[in-house]
Length: 434
Ligand SMILES: [Zn+2]
Ligand SMILES: [Zn+2]
Image 1 (cartoon, rainbow, N blue to C red):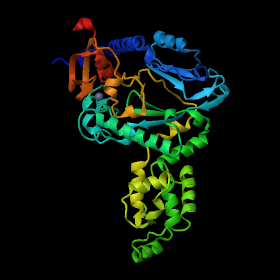
Image 2 (tube, rainbow, N blue to C red):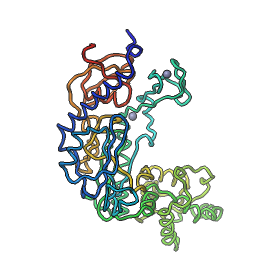
Image 3 (tube, rainbow, N blue to C red):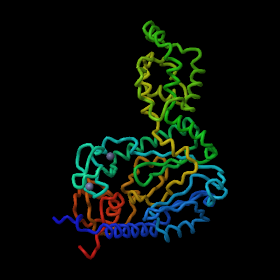
Image 4 (tube, rainbow, N blue to C red):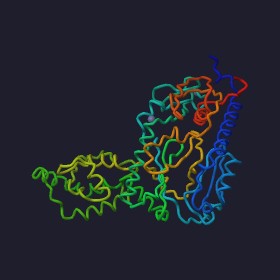
């Protein structure tokens, strides 16, 4: 087989791929106008978009739905964003916008959950010459063809990856509803269009300032809880141990357990001294700290949540089991996204240029289990085009299986072609050449 890769002019290939992609996106915006979400208080939002040449436009204000749709049709952006904030003057400079409020948002990135399956489906290709990098540690790999050490990691999410993300969404929603009293009607869940989920909270939570948002994130991550428990019980370790030996039942509740719980909640909210990834590590001999089991019983919030997770019956629990419980029960949200109120965030109903899938909303929270992004968010047309695929694993889109491919020319539906082109592992071919 001829190595098309060698004899193609890089510039032509890129520009033809870009024009095919732009055409695919244009058709989407023409056919799926109704999918595009018009945000509430649209005139108070800042809009921005990226072009296929990589440039970006920000600080736009849009009057109404018609103007928004016109922008998509005329400019055919590669990505479209809308502020989470509501501003007095959204098109002015950051300092002059006048922040009024902001949706409380959470970002769950499946990549950060480090799915075990990624090694079975992700691929690595050389950033310089697009040569596929085979097995072995991709972090230390060198391209066998050009010697470059710049390797692109290309993510091919599978159903298992998506299930991991859904699990975090469910934990997050549970904490928001049970502990923060958020009305389910005010929670909106979206698939990001690539490898994650976005959760928006509307209503009175839009008034929280950045510091309060940080407290909310700390709480959701269970930060500070381990330190608070260690502080309360760690020093009495030997005494607790003796007591534990003496009375293995120990069902009597300590008289000040209620106040210690309150101070623990305060510590969690403030995220005291635990850093981003320290929860659940148990690296400093925390195994030796034992906590009386009854303080977890019949209470709300984190302590009750941990109590329900732990096996019943033990008189004391090790700090290690508590750390494991927090790790299992916390929702792995990206703190930076929630804290940043000035962020512009992908607009629902628009396409993600990393995948050509659409960011879409789950109509109801209960729909999340049956939601399949590879069908429900794959909305590019079925017409067939010719592409040259450098490397791709086996994957499924719209219920059809594709791949694996390795340096080959294939005729594919446009939705599959654009998926691969967006990932930087396929080129559009001139139709006349095939
Ligand atoms: Zn190379
Ligand atoms: Zn996977």
